[in-house]
Length: 414
Ligand code: HEC
Image (cartoon, rainbow, N blue to C red; front, top):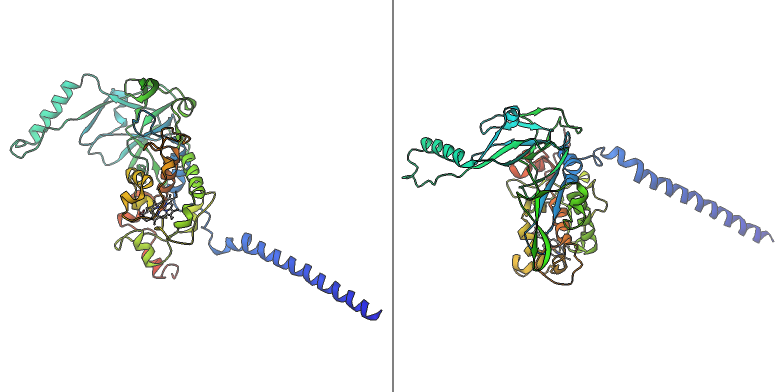
């Protein structure tokens, strides 16, 4: 009898000890995951720069991409411009001249201006009327500045002549000339005309240079109705029209999200890492000996739903691939057939990123990239390009992150 009682007591004690143990572990887990990080590095969940925020909040949702359609007229990048929201600049350069009516003249940044003129007023550019006279005038002027041009073997320049006008709209779509990886960015030396936009421009801003309206025309291609970009065609009435129906544009924001998903589903993380460690071999491989790439920091990933630091490097690390390899053409041919770009590559070919349907459902293996390709490309291009603004970036040798100090363990000593 006595022995039995002792047994029960022992059992009760061990049950109590287990419960206490579980509670202790549970509260420690809460402490480690929720409370401790706040005291370790308060910047880990904040954006690393204003540029990162503005790319995510201002640029990405307003850039729209359409993948090549059956006509094969190539990729289109379009900016969604909104009165009082988008910042625009109209800028002359060596080969581009702009004219406007008296009232709009102050919106033009001339070639030798020290400051970029920006505005949140919705204005657009179009080819100037009766260009012949103006073209001749400019060429004469150029000849006077280059009297020996013929003997020096120079050829007569041909100018792009544009006119600034007020489309009297509150929104419009504009063709973007860049391939959209790095946006024009100013922190100093700019004048803002008109009202300030609703986002913070105090530390710098993304602006759209020389916007021209995106217009399309319908055409027949192999018996089917299709469309092409055409300067003299019809403007796009609204966002819905751009996103739905025949045009099928997707915002860069949604492509980046899709790209994250493609990366996950295709198992890219099995062969690639997404982290530059604080080791010389990583920073030099992802940058160069002169301009080592900054090691990855937690806040680079704040806009990602899933992160893929990875464990094995069967292929190279991808955390700075947006700088190392920014050309869309390179990625196109690499995903289509990795061996053509890298001799002996063991990376599998991703033929299903290419077919003759933008949504990627057609079984025809045509070499036209579909949205899976655009998504993974846009996702890869965020890697390394958003840590710091392009005008103070490490690949220009400016290194605001002090990479050398980090890899040599000096950062944080002061
Ligand atoms: C079986 C392993 C494997 C898988 C899976 C894989 N890769 Fe690769 N990847 C490699 C190897 C090996 C290389 C180096 C040779 C080359 O350039 O093809 C490479 C190279 C690359 C490069 C060029 C990087 C540079 O700095 O030169 C990119 C970009 C890339 N892969 C992206 C991807 C993406 C995105 C996926 C998923 C859709 C993926 N890879 C899936 C093995 C893989």
